[in-house]
Length: 145
Image (tube, rainbow, N blue to C red; front, top):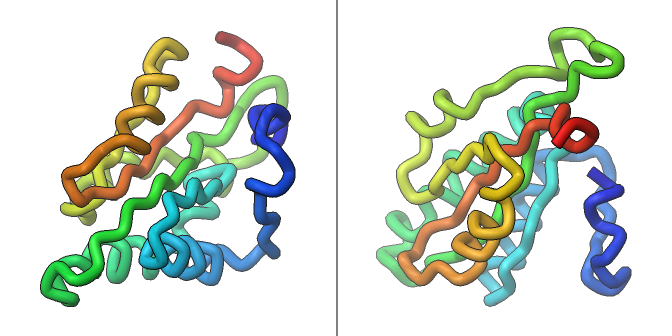
C-alpha cells in the first residue's frame, strides 16, 4: 500500500513496528485526543492481530465511557493480492462479513470498484454520527483497475 501514499507528506505518516495490536491501540489513543487517524493494515490477515483493540475498544468505547469518548478512526485494509503471485492462504483472507457481524459502532465498507474509493474516504473522514470506518480494498485491483 506504500505506493498509494506517495502524495501524503512525511509529517503526516507514522511508521509503526510490526505489532498490530499496539498499532490499533495507538490509533484509538490518537482518536481520543481528537485526531482522525487512518491506520493501515496491508491485509485482513494482519488486521486480525489488532482485532482485540478494534472489537473490544474502538467499537465499544463510546458505550463503556457513557458517551464521554466518541473517537473517529479510519481503518484501512485489503483482501490480499493473488496476482501476479499467490502469497499463500494466510495472506488472502476476506473477513469483511465476519467483522460486520462483530462491529456495531464501526461501519465496514468493502470497496469493490475504484469509483467508490474517494467517496468512501470522504464519508469516513467527514462523518459526524459517532462511528469509525473500516475500509476494505482489493489488493489485486492496485494493478488491475
